[in-house]
Image (cartoon, rainbow, N blue to C red; front, side, top):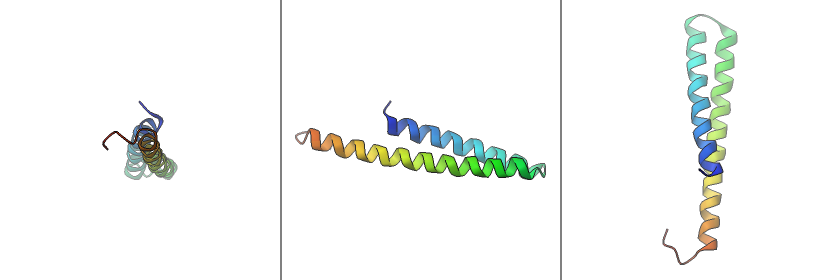
Length: 71
């Protein structure tokens, strides 16, 4: 698995974990857990978008490296 795909996958995982923490914190009126979850969710979104950008760069690099291949 390439770096971009790994970051996208890990980002999605962190985003989901953050959402669970945020919701759990909201249900139990635990502002600390809710804030931690919100922060993790945002960090996951950032990591996911970085992964997507890396995938785009990798794809463009491959296009330049092998122009005969059909994309």
